Every structure is written in C-alpha cells, then in structure tokens.
Length: 235
Image (cartoon, rainbow, N blue to C red; front, top):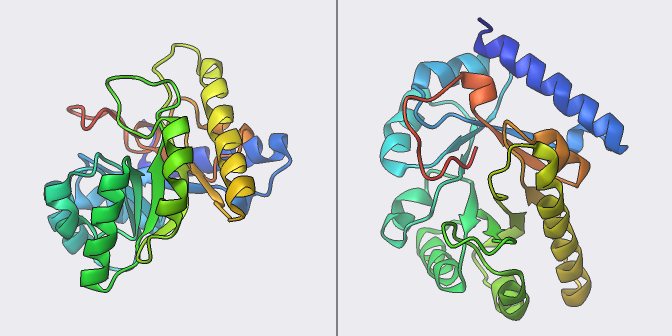
C-alpha cells in the first residue's frame, strides 16, 4: 500500500501531466492536501515530502492539529464557514474557500479588521443551484460583486465550486467551465483580477485543471479513505 510520500509524488505527476495537456505551467496549480480527519503525524509526513498547503473543515479539529504541527505550512479552511466560528477561523487559516453569501463576507470583513488580518477569500458559487449546497447563484454574485470587491479587509482572490456528484468525472467539466466563464465575466465587468479558481477533488482534479483550476483539493488520493464523512466532502 502506497504511503503518503508515494501518493503525493503520484498526484504531483498527474497534476504535471494535466498541466502539460492543457498547455499550462505546473506552477500555476496549487495542491491543497485535505488533511481533515487525519492526525498531525500524517500532516508532518506530508510536510517532510515537500507539501506545504493543507485543508481542514472543522475548526475544533484543526486548532489542536495546527498547534501540534507547528512550522510554516499554509492552512486552507475548506468547510462551511459558520458565523459563530469566524473569530476562531480567521487567525488559523490564511485562505478560506467557502464564503457563500454577502452577509457572511461582510461579517468576515468586519471581524478581520478587528483582528488586524486580511485573509485570502474564495467566493463559493453554486452553479447547478443544488439545494443541498451553499454558494452564490451566478446571477446573485453578479449583483453583489461590486460590494464584495470593495470589502477592505478581505482579499478576494477568486471563485470556488463543488459540482454535483457524478459517476463519470467528465460530467463535471461543464460546471468547472461555467465557473471559469463566470470569473472571466466578473473580471471584464468590474475591471479587476480574480486569479484563482478552487475546483477539483480526488476524482476529477485533472478535468478541473483542463478548465482552469489553480487550486485542487485532494484528500483521499493522498491520505487514504476516511473513517467518516465531513462537511459534504469538499476534498
């Protein structure tokens, strides 16, 4: 059975191949190793193999893990952001992947200002309008984007989505493409840069890279199967 180091190497090669096929530079895609439900020892093993970006989705699990790991990895919060946890989340995570409403973004902005922080933010989009998932509807994001862009204490770097569950990864392509096209339209309409797209997980990250992903969230293909599901499995 492959260890974490071997799995990271295999994923890196697949990312490199997907980038070559898409005519992209390998450095344009960041691998976020989704370490939720796995112990600090697994994270340290991944760090020893050169991995520096890790994703967690429950602050109560992440707090002791981050303290135990120490060092300088970059932590990404990839779970549903609950308002009552924002004050705990912001000091721990440099990047947050699932800000899904103007109200939540505004609260994060005020809290970040109070804490003297400026986190990197992905706005979560729900392109398929699934009731079970959070996120802006594309037309809703277009309406609110001018306000979101001007929030002073959030660095909005791009968009994130979780496509509907499918058996064939190729069926996710249209949702990844829709997110990229929405990003491109927002950039044109608001004369701004949104350089990042967080999309693609263990089963479909190569399709996501072909459609422009800059951050892929991969967990089970690195660390193995989880004992339980967390937050809808965002990675």
